[in-house]
Image (cartoon, rainbow, N blue to C red; front, side, top):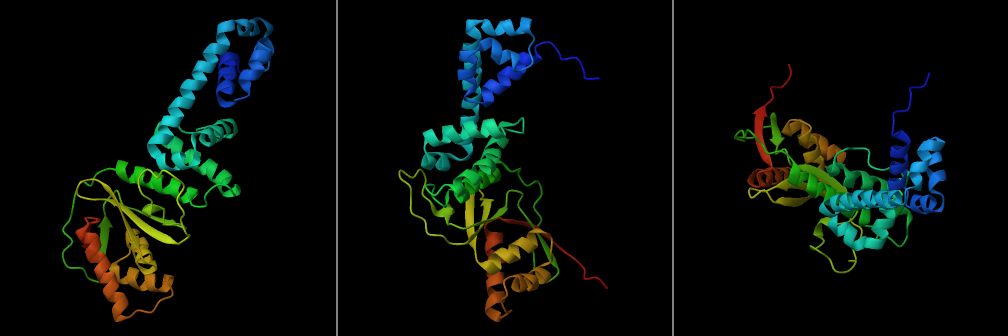
Length: 279
């Protein structure tokens, strides 16, 4: 047996539909009573839809919701929005609401959900700059790093051996792009020209808590990936060479040592411990 529909549920369903579909306003203006009947109202409750002010209130609610969503996107991906243009963003936001809508109750999750949805549209549209998906992800990365929790305890690094396990600051993130979007200037006034280039970017916070980026070589990215998962330095170094199909040489080991020193000086490495080799 189906549970009895609570009072007001048809009205709520109608409001949600009105907010999510840009075409719902025209449908409601054309046949207000029919609009509510289509959302489960009985003939008596549907007469509520004949209230001339209800459509205006519904439209106000929709504008408020869209306004909050746009604000959330503007905070998280401002460069992406500027390059796409407000008209296109409005259209894609309408489509996002109609097809899927936010799944999280938190505004901070709106931008990642929107980017995951819109990326398919961007990739499939030849008029969209090819770097836009990477740019949006990079802006989300920057926002995530800026909002990451602070480190509570810092353990001195000390001498590093092959058995050393290193820990990174909580804010550190490793990302891979097909375009050097991290090199774009602040607030571009026109669509820039970016040539494709595979990039591995380590994002972190400096001592002033500003978000910074370090571009890594293929070997450096492979090494950092493994070290961040808890592999001891010696094991991570050997596996990183295998991952990049490169030979272990004096030069490659020197580059690994220089990278680790650089990470420590930047404050990216926050501690170490020695892991005893298994018997």
